[in-house]
Image (tube, rainbow, N blue to C red; front, side, top):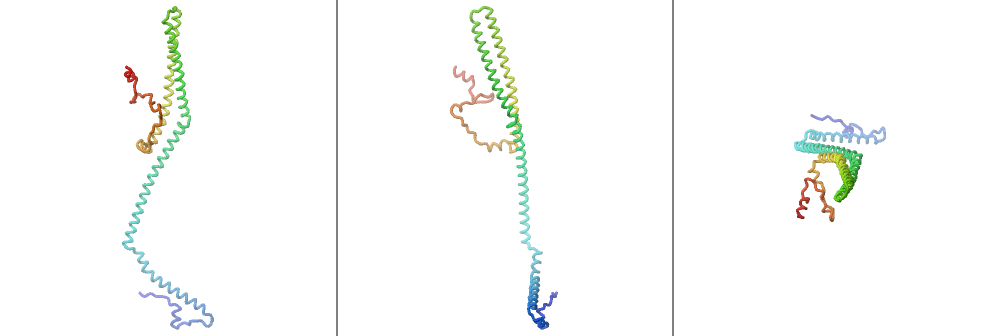
Length: 256
């Protein structure tokens, strides 16, 4: 099919159909501008015919280009999957951090810096004070009983013996009363133990959040005994289930 094209002014000038200059006007500049315009039009038309096959080639990509596009698409999909997995892991870490913060906030508000820790300190101080006071009363009563028993061994009147006997009984009663500190001490220590268990529970929860005890042990520093001298030998009092301590029977057997 033949392509119909425009007949340009320059072609008419070259064939003699049209005059080169308009002598009536007396100025050749307008004709020069027309010639340059026609040349630009011819160049644009030739460029459009040249780009025709290239555009058809772009509309129909080669198999190699299709393969490269598929590989690039697969790579993008793999990267998107990795990003999704990373987001899941980051969400888990974010949730663990938030839960740990909540546990720390509970401990900080109710145990470490709150009224509960002040109560624990007060209870332990009361245990120490009550134990010292009861011990002092028991020692005084025992000393008085020992003196009265020694006096009874001597020749005394019946009235003096009855008076010493009554004093011994009073001192024994005082010992029984002083031993009531055990009940108060047990109650106070029970309160302290409840607070310690509360702290232990929340610390255990935080350890479970981060993988359990085994995961925490991997980051635990080495325990170094910094005690020197006789302090390194002090490991008592001995617990009921502890081993490696010398008992009173071992000491008696050594002296026997």
